[in-house]
Length: 292
Image (cartoon, rainbow, N blue to C red; front, side):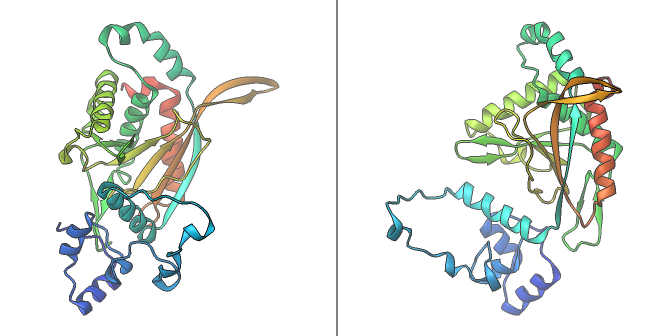
C-alpha cells in the first residue's frame, strides 16, 4: 500500500520509532494512519491517547454476553475512526423536491416490470450525483497524502453503501455519468444482492468519486455520514417526507427527500457545498436534466 495517508507529525514519529508506515497500513487493512496507531496499535483515542479507562468489567453491573467483532468489521471501524480523527468534516443539510421523480417512476413501472428491473429512487440519486460531480469537478477529486496536491478525476464512479449481515460494504458503479437509468438500476440491484451474499470482489469496491449512504428505506430525517477517504465527500439520504410549501397564500404538499453532504473542509468550503447541493437538488427536482 504505497499511498499511505498520514500527517507530517505522524510520519516524523514513525521515523523516530522506526515504524514502516506502509507495512503498518497493510497490517491494519487501511491507508489512513493516525498517531494513536503508532502508540500500542490503538485506533481510537481517549484523553491524551489513553483508552485504558474504557476497559471496564461490565458484568459487575449485571448480566452480559460477548460477541466477537469480525475482521471485516474491525477494519471498517479502524478506518472510520481514523477518518474522523484526521479529516475536518462538516455536514451540509438540504432537501429536494422529488415530485417529478416519483411521477416518472410510476409512469415507467410497466416498462420496469417488462424489463425485469426495479427502478428505485436510488438510481435517480446516482444519476443526479454523477451529473453534479461533472459540474463541480473539485468534488470529484482526492487530496494526496501530504495534503499538497489535489488529484482531479476524469471519471465518475459512485459508491453505494450496502448494509449486510457481515458489515457495511461499498461496491462501486463505474462511469455512472455515461450510463442510463435502466443500467444503473440493474447494477444497483446486482451489486446489492452480491454484497449480501459476500460475492463482491475487491476490484468492485475501490476508486469511487463519491459514495451514497441511503437510509431512506429504514427511516430518519437526517444524519452525518462520515467521509470515506480518499474521497472528499459523501452523500446521505433519508426517508422522503411531505413538506408544506406555500405558493403565495396557497399551501401545497410536496414530497421532499432530506440530503446530507459531509465533506472534507481542507478542500471544500461551505459556499462550495451549498452551491453543489443547490445544483443537485435542482437536478433531482427536474429529472429531465439528468438525461442531457
